[in-house]
Image (cartoon, rainbow over all chains, first blue to last red; front, side, top):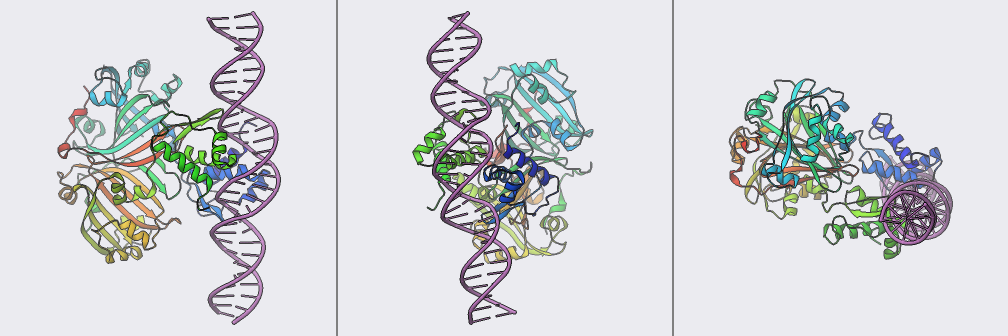
Length: 263
Length: 263
DNA sequence: CCACCTTACTTGTCATGACAAGTGCACCGC
DNA sequence: GCGGTGCACTTGTCATGACAAGTAAGGTGG
């Protein structure tokens, strides 16, 4: 028995929900029916349904059979952390152009985020990320020195830094993302092909080990006409988060979007 | 017995964790100990721990007693939905200035978001939201007509629209938030006291009933120097989301933030 | 002194049984 | 026809019991 029964039940139901076999609003089999189908007691069945409920996939309550709430699944941790993995999962082609990689003393903001002293050495990476060849995001990442030094042995244009670090034994398992908006500076503007001062969606990310030790701090600036971030929120279920690609047109970025003005 | 035992156990442990009595990294009582303390079987105890695990508060695994992972709790649904409730929970004073409330035919974007026909009547509300008297957010909300009509009997400058709608029987129980960045138009600029074209953090929110029927669509534009949004993400636990107030200075918004430029 | 193994303790999983509480529908009386 | 009632079915909650699987510590043999 490799996988627990309740996980197999959950996986099966999840597959049927996201696959569309069970459409939104449709009623799932009742607990007793699932018990019969899988020849198990109510325990594992309830455990599976509880997991799906926590994911926000199914709803329902006492006296009411479970129903499909949505076919949307929250993006897993790795997908949410790595641009390359996210793009590939979307079926798009990720790309990158490394502008510079450098070892230099930590600036105050970086030192604070990485919990090291100002002036301690860090490895900073400045990359332009592409989606199907289109400029999408400017990434300014600072790694603590023991992690960053690994990057000098790696072609940062070739693939996912995250996957490379993972196979080198760097465990990134907790992350904190803070979102705001900034105006494009000269570097952003020329790389992303937008006018200077254009609004960009900024994600500042701090990621580290399970113990809370920070490994990387990143300042990512997205073209808001290409990428948005999404939070799905329900009364009782846990929120689900995701990064969303918007297949917009190239000329979509106007200085002031007047089309949404009321009156 | 008003509250189920497993909920009482979970509440007690949660209180002790966020209250600091159980610090991060500390071990919780083992299951058998909790069984003794509460004089219950393992069922409710495991249910309580499972809930806390889903909230990301505790970790641990087979053979290892549960440990406190973090004292941070995800903001509850209502707090994340209502500006007034959020501000008050923060200990700040929310304020609002209603610029206009109008009944008009739905524009295409609004009609699409509310799943009604273009030109169907909607009630649109344009408000400036304040935090401790400082301009913080411009809110453009469109309600479906049956809900929006209630607002004409309500002083939209007096308090929380959500609290009012809730007590009138409107159940907002699912919401979807999409984040991007836009440049401030003339209206935004004059209300928020920023230069036209300044970058704003935009949250577009669609909220509705549990059945998925949309009730409101809102375009909220935040001053990014005052409010940010946060996602806390861990390898196995569900993500926790929050809206964060940044006690910044008033002169913090420069045309181009050059201080974060590398090299 | 160190590597290995045994052992006690922990959590994960599952079965079985029982009752409470909520929902929806069919039936019945008016 | 219509409204109210009762019943069948559903999920929520909890007890008890059992075994598997993983962890950590202490003892043992080299």
